[in-house]
Amino acid sequence: MFSLSVCVVYGGMFESSNSTKYLDDLNILNLKSLEWIQVILEGPRKPGRAMHSTCVNHKSLIIFGGLNEVGLVKGNIEILELD
Image (cartoon, rainbow, N blue to C red; front, side, top):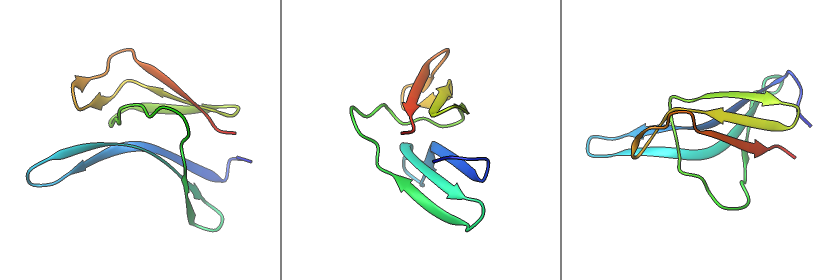
């Protein structure tokens, strides 16, 4: 399903003049067609996060660290299966 011709984007942060929201969404950009795919996540939702690191290993998206609504997420790892 996935190859080197995609960019996977998880989470992020939305700031307005009176609030900050940490996102928990997953989007994939097809680099050949430049089309975005919004992935519907199943199961319990994790708190959103921003300023984290991610990598893909086989069919798993590994998310490490970052910030969420309570502050710095040190040493926290989440794994999303990309089936």
